[in-house]
Image (cartoon, rainbow, N blue to C red):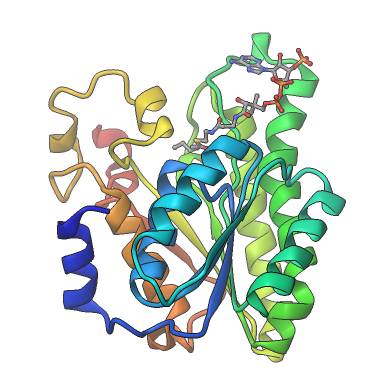
Length: 268
Ligand code: HXC
């Protein structure tokens, strides 16, 4: 991992903040989620990565395993969050190998640009199933562990559905559903000591979303109030905060990490 990222995490957070904890991450070999995992490992958290692509999962597990020797990292490829049985099986193997699950990141997502006229019913359903049903399945499969350990959940949402973004009707609908799921679960699961929050990333450099949704990158940073494109580290820092005791009275929130971009509205 990059030394500058490690140094920043260790300047801000205690190196053993998450020692003894275990986090399961769906879509864990993606650009954003693998860097959330990296930050958690730096701070002592063991990790279980779940993903559809075996090669991507293997590569991420290898990279994470090299960061810290007293932390365990396991991965389960070939796991499709649309299938509850598939997620349940990976959760069971995680508990067998790592002993527990304290934190869950629901990060598995699908996206492509498609205008309404060229989007089939199955294309729309595919994204709803990966993003929304997949998030539900992950919580459902981890529920017993999260209950026992008074755990914490982070859903990966977006800001697309705060306004209208063309060619993203499927993703926007899915992410709006995730926000609603998060709100309801925060209220239902709060009395059990389970905290539930969303992170809504804005334009984050190096991600597929940024590549696809921002074709013209020249001068783009100047459209963002904080005058820069976001980094995967920005999302990782929000993740650390939401899993740490610093946010022990925080649930049912959507942590927007976008440099103030969506607040610009029509000024862009
Ligand atoms: C129109 C499309 C399409 C496209 C697929 N489909 N791509 N329709 N335009 N570009 C249609 C197919 O024709 C099919 O419908 C249906 O979608 C399912 O396609 P499959 O390829 O069979 O599905 P599957 O193999 O399950 O793949 C799912 C996927 C794929 C979402 C389509 O792109 C994927 O696996 N993506 C995972 C990785 C990914 O996209 N990550 C990006 C995350 S970024 P028919 O009718 O033909 O059967 C992100 C950021 C969001 O989420 C926020 C941005 C700010």
